[in-house]
Length: 101
Image 1 (cartoon, rainbow, N blue to C red):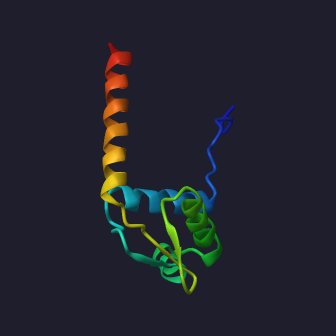
Image 2: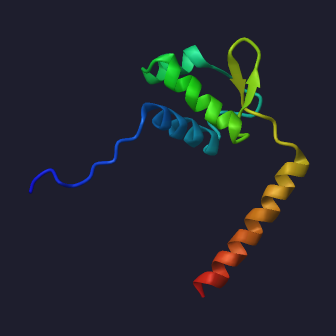
């Protein structure tokens, strides 16, 4: 029967969150950058509510920090945190190699 395939509906908040995560992962959003909800909403062509919700999700996962005046910031990463991330990444890569063998 046509149309019986399940289509995946992704909420607008999740779409905005994924877009911001992608921008963070490729370095488009630099550490220390101030993110203003209204500007992001205008850039993405959506209302402020899904943007605010997406930003708050990213704050709860420590990907962003709250800044004054209804803004958010990309946190600075300390050298200690960077070294810890690198150590974890290396360990995960080694485990993946062992699991694939």
